Amino acid sequence: MNSINMDSVADVVFQLKWNSQQAAHNECYSARGVNLWRDWLPDTVRRSLIGMRSCEHADVMFSPGELFGNHGGHLKVKRRQFSRDPKAGRFYPKGCLRDLAGVFPQNMQPIRCVGVNNGHMEVDIAHPLSLQPLSLSMTVGQVSAKESERGGSSVDWVGLLTEGPGMQARWQGRPTDFFSDNPFVRRDEQTDDRFYDNPRLVHHIDETAREMMADFYKRFVKDGVHVLDLMSSWVSHLPIGVNPGRVSGLGMNRTELEHNPRLTDLQVHDLNATPMLPYKNESFDVAICNVSVEYLTQPLEVFADVGRVLKPGGTLVVTFSNRWFPPKVVHIWEQIHEFERVGLVMEYFLRSGAFYNLGTYSMRGLPRPKNDKYASELALSDPIYAVWGTKLE
Image 1 (tube, rainbow, N blue to C red):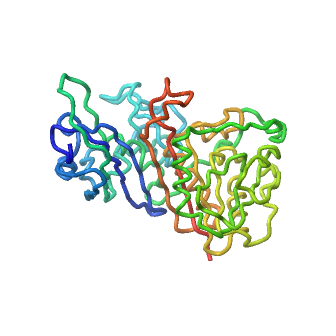
Image 2 (cartoon, rainbow, N blue to C red):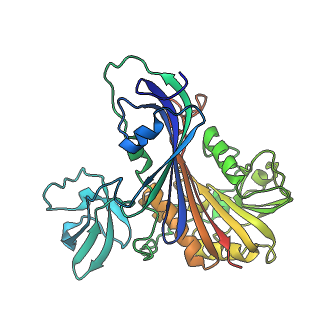
Image 3 (cartoon, rainbow, N blue to C red):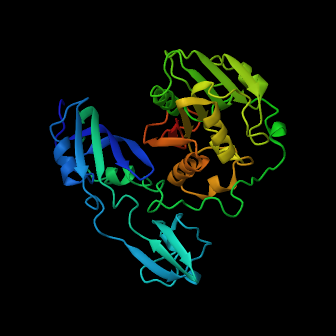
């Protein structure tokens, strides 16, 4: 089958672009087996897909509120009606609200605390993207004839795409309260040099996620540039075929660093003990930090010092997924939604005072490799999230 019709299924990569006051955002979701007859899609999206062929691309624009309707708004409730200790700007399951008609403890819809004052709190129950103009792109992959319909479930692909995005942005430009109540304590507070004493020559995300991360870095890492690999290990996730002029690895275990073929030089250094980096001012064009930012106990100091060692106009790129070492991850990381973690890292950039021109990226929905050890338990590849910023000149 060459083109999409109501009797076909297709693989489609959806890409949602939107802007907050602080950053440009790009959310990607790989949808496999989209069934135009059975699955739920907005009419404008369905009409755009019909007739498209493999590798073709289409765009649909949504005005504010068009995709999510006008449902939601603000509620003012008594503080005692909320089962958690709310923090301004943070998201919580709607089921945390008590004594409200139609609200049950099992309701996991995210709502946002936007203010706490004098025994009352105000919550925003609208979708976090409801006030944003949105650009939705669709790129078609394989198209094939569907099997005969014999029931089955309907998938809301745009709902999956927009489940989480928007939560990373500040509410009305106000900083989110991620920093009260000791956010950077950890279960294991022994010195990190003891925990990382034994080398771990293992991958922390699956092969597909690693490929996506390396492909993403092509945007920033070019031939000849000087790269700082923060919190490095035996893998840097740099793209194959790109030849930086220098790759300096800063990590906790010498054996891991010595096994990394991309490093031109290395230093063992504990950023949680000494946030200042052992490099001269304006030494690097790009700094990267892969699947490690969740272990920083002094992130604002580290981000500020990265600004010192970057050249004017240089870029810091932070990538992560949803897997970590529980003993060493900071408390706040485990307490918040995956897309709120994107917002937390954005706060590191913003509060460090060293960066502007922020951007974020997410990729979800790709199939997990069949030979992955978790393939029998997890159908989808590990998600990839990224935040980056440019050093102030």
